[in-house]
Picture 1 (cartoon, rainbow, N blue to C red):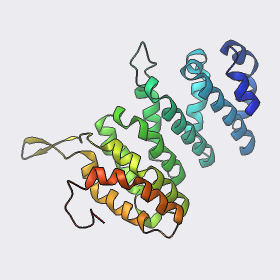
Picture 2: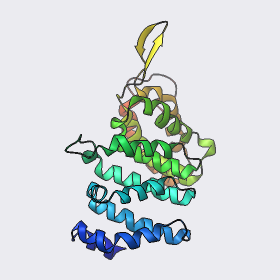
Picture 3: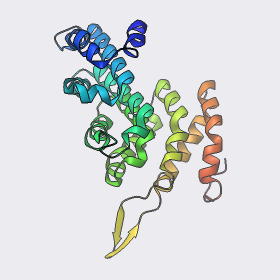
Picture 4: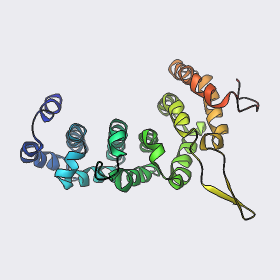
Length: 251
């Protein structure tokens, strides 16, 4: 894997397409055992991480394979798809935001719709990876998607009763980034007796959930989780200390 990663960064895509794509596609086929398919997916995703949108521009089947991973019937494979989307969006957010012709336009037309599907996955680990995948592109999501898809999934993940320690550890690391990204993004318009008004900013709407979860990780018995809470303390102080006077905000 390391050799492949090193080589593809130093050769033309035409050579990669001629020599490597077909064997990788064969590894990814659904008829293969899960471990073999996962190896193929790692090679495919390694290629895309190195080549970026060029890979999708040069060979449309590569994008189709990635989408297939995200929608596979096996949850282990879908986790791979969500992890790929997380890393790809995080590393390429600035480029993906560019409108055509500078950019590919795939952020709005393909990646965000795929992310929405994964946010509603039945498997918690898939949803967890999808929440993190969305952090860097929150400001590129339509308000309706934030309100109907991303935020409800986030709130569900903040329900501590249904979480194992792995999930709590991951959430405790990213909760500050999520809250900070949501700062200042307006919610969908609301109409009260015919008068259009704006619901408070998204982070304010989530205030109770965010503060409650932050208190939960501050008091957690796991040292790593409490450390993550301490790391996120400056962010929560910035977002809530001055504006929130309700009980629990200063604890």
